[in-house]
Image (cartoon, rainbow, N blue to C red; front, side):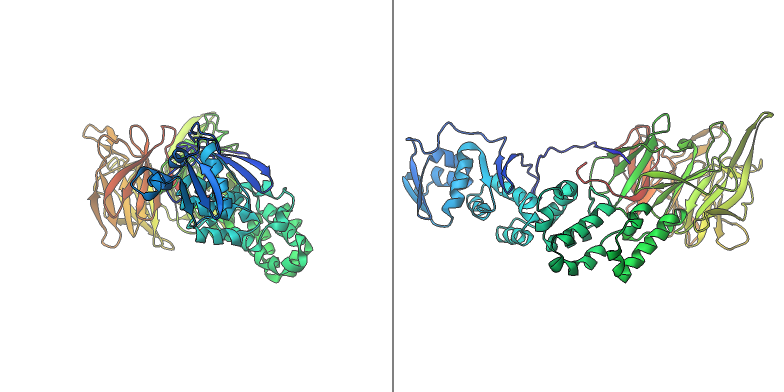
Length: 604
């Protein structure tokens, strides 16, 4: 499926190396030969002096080789020489200086940079250049060397790269090497001798790393076989350890059928393949399993916010990681065949389920869809027994629960609607819904959450004319029991609110409450229910200048993430500190947030 990413906060960098500081190094590069690269510092301010002209005013003796140079050029290019020639050091007045600690080969290469703003790196001089760059404190050249080690040398001599990184204090370069491989692996395999020279002590750690790779799992599988075939006698013992890192469950059924017989020689791999075939065929059950091998490579827990184009045929997703600013936007050619804005949603496993709402002719819908974040596709699963809109959907680790709502019907004779008290539960193993005990009264616009084998339902509007509007009621249903049990009512009656479980407490935000004139207003008072003590406590009130909070929220650790406000921001409520913090501006089209494990490139 074609994907298009955009990142709101873009960063400028053509090449980046080990992240030892915040400095952005800008460079251009030209390949002279397969392993010889000339780098150009596009920001370098060259002086008018020419190398080896008659105006040179100092002679340097480096490792027995003499170089005639200009003090001004050296001072501008290197802090080392700037200190030497501009302060009260004995070398300031000397016209001949000996430097014993570095090699002439490295100094000759770096001299081109001092005069022209470019330097040529090859396997023959990389260590000498690193030595000189460190000695003369020339950060740009150190970064150039890192880039060369990552993009060229690591693919043929990973051990040497690690040795140089340790020797010259370059930091751990493994992450940068893996990122380069992950982004370019499909192009690299087409290069002559790439697989032949690709070191085994790089390939296995690379496959073990949880990093986003611009390649399918079947491609990585064939890469392993092709790599082994380059030198079978030596590499055949590595085949099984490498195959253990393949995520067979992420392959297509036809790809699994094409796997060669040689991999079936290993019993554990044979079992993995059979397990993958069964897993792929049982689509609704996939939400019950959450092992790492079932996730896309590079998956990470993010906040995902789905919204649609006006014609409903384009799925848009905004991603936000917890520890980085900025929103990543992804546009998918994947449509949802229902009106998303009227549905209810809940996460089961690592899948987002969307249920109910309205049909195209505004009848209540019984349809249920599952969003697979690995492939960014919507899959329709078993329909609810009862069409519902304005209901509540929540989940346990293995089940979905649909509670109450409205059944709105339009026929040739007219339209009608009934407020529901029925509840039902989804079994992914059977892809079916089964009845649960009904609530004592019909309710719509309620909220629900699950905790410790108990479903909780709060608030909403009842079909009982004697009940307050909206309701303050809280009901609890223990799975397997015969009926719902009333609990302590909320402090503030409300409808259209959110309710989330964190550490055996229910947190309720937003919604609408009634005024004395029977009209409705935004409810800015928030509260928390202690399940153990059956008591409600007021928590931080939503500031008036923020405005209404939406009902679909996400929870990560002890933080509850909420979309809302007059200008639509993402907020985080800290359950430990009782604080509400503004995280990110979103835009009016985003009204819901969930937490999912999603894979996408780091550089978007």
